[in-house]
Each structure stands twice: as C-alpha cells, then as structure tokens.
Image (tube, rainbow, N blue to C red):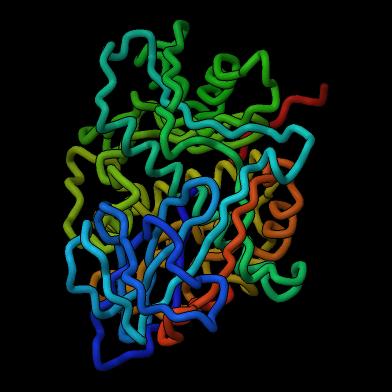
Length: 399
C-alpha cells in the first residue's frame, strides 16, 4: 500500500529534505548504543516525493511486505547507487508491512478496481488509462488508512498512533480488471445515465460485475465510456453511486489523475486550468488539482457507502468539517491531506478532510480492514526529524 508520512524538520539551517528508501537496515538500528558511522546504502530508486511548508513536510512511500527502512536527510550529496555518510541530523524509521493473511485467519471481503467498457467501446484500452486508475486506487487506500488513524488516534488501542489499517488489494502491481458489458452500448449508457441520477445505469452494471466465486467482492468501478458533452454542457453516461458490492463513478475526468504514485503530490499542486470544452470539470473549480481532488475523493465517498457508511447528519457536518467530511462534500478537499497549499495559498490544517467519528469507527471494525501495516518508528541516527502520531434485500445506491 501507499503510506503518507508527515512531520517536522527541525534543522532550519538546512531546509532541503531528501527522503530515501534503504537497501537494508543500517548497522545498529535496533540498538542505539552502537556506533552508526557505517555508510548507509540507499536504494537505486529515485528519492521519495516530498512537499514542504516551512519546517513541515509530507512524503509518500510505497511499501513492500516486511520491513521498510526510510532515511530522512538534509545533507544528501551522493549518488543514489553510492553509500551515504550518516549525519547527526539524519533519521531512519522502520515501517513493517504485515499481510492480511498473517493478521486474521477468517476471510475478508475483497476490494478490486474495475474499468468498465461498453460493448461498442474501442477494443484497445490505453495503458495510460489503467495506470491512472491504479494510482487513484492507491490514493484512496492511503487516504482511508490515514483518516481512520487520525480519528481513532486519541481513543483507539494503545500504540494506535503508529498503526494503520487498510483493505487488501494488490493494486500496486496488478492491472485493474477490465469488464466489457455485452448488453450495454454507449447510447444505452447515455440514456440510463440521464434517468433518475444514473440509478438505472448502476442497476444495469451491478449485474455484470459480480464475482460468482467471491460474492462479497466490492467493485470500485470507473466507466471509461463517460464523456463531456460541450453542447449540452453535461457529462454523459455518468453517475456517482455506491451501495452493496458496487461503487460506480464516471471516468470523464480521468485525464487529470496522476499516472504514478510518485506524481500524486505534483498533481494536487498543479495550478493549470482545466480544458472545460473537453473535460468534465466536476466541482466547477477549474484547476487540475481541484478536479483530481474532487473526482478521486468521490471514489472514496462511493466506496464508503459500500462499506456501510451513510451521509453524515447536519449536526455532524457542522461539528467535523465544513463539508461534512468525506461522506459529505468534504471529499472535494482530499488534496489537503497530501499537500499544504491550493493555488499558492497555504490553508489551515483544520481544513483538512476527515472521516466523522462514526464513519471511522465503522471502518476500523469492518471485516474488509484486516490488513495492517504497523509503523515502528525509531531515529537511531539522530533526532532532528520527527514524525507526528497521527441473502438480504437489494441495496439502494447512494450518491
């Protein structure tokens, strides 16, 4: 899974921060009394993406099973394939990813990414489209995990500030499932999408995405046949609905989604205008960062309905977030979880998106959230970088 790390960089004399994955644990990592003068061997991958605001930073890391060692340094001057000499202000943390199978013996509902096509859609699906959908899946998984942790941190189990829960899917390496619906043409999808908020379109699609061998599988499905009609000034073959085993969303804005997890921070900071003649500007804010935030956030919102989350009550909206959190209209601000500014304006940390308390508790105990990845945080190479603790009736789809 993708993980968000946030903290404070206390060495103001050297503001540049580099975050690197290590090839192996540095000598003496578990014993802070040992010498740490040995060179640290970094991986041959690029540094992790980082965004900063003064002494504050946020970074993303894609975890692998087992132990993941991450180096924070303000004094990196070497090549990626060369040893890095440790500095007093360096810090290393270890994040251990424990697969779901090791945490819970009972099966849990699977969540999968699906790209939907009509019977008369083009045969070839561009790799770029699948990459953007895969990345969006990583973003909503990361966001859900982090937002649950933040809400539960004060009252959750001991040590929860260093623990994150997530659902299990191999979205980092697996290609999203492509489903071509034989009974659905593009013209029929347009007609069904125009009726009752797209409810009939959801009803037609849900019949074709069920997994017979795994009936509890929840499908996060994006319609690759949605498009923006600039004459009628509306999205066609589009809806945003979630219930039961289908979270359905139109793909008329996928072109602004990040292609890779390394592009996520850059997209959420991208101030370029959206071409409103070609792209559905969902949220009507006219910028790439805003459109990516609204549409990827809406996917998480619709998945929330499949995981038993309702829209928040009016009093909950006022108490938790101006937009009511992710299950209200707070998904418009999903970008604020990952970056510090919008259009060059630094926003207040209190304006970040949230899950209301009821939603966080439901998700924390939901059977889909069996997968744990626990962060064991230590800084044996210095202490100048700190990470902050942070058969039933058919369901009716909800927007």
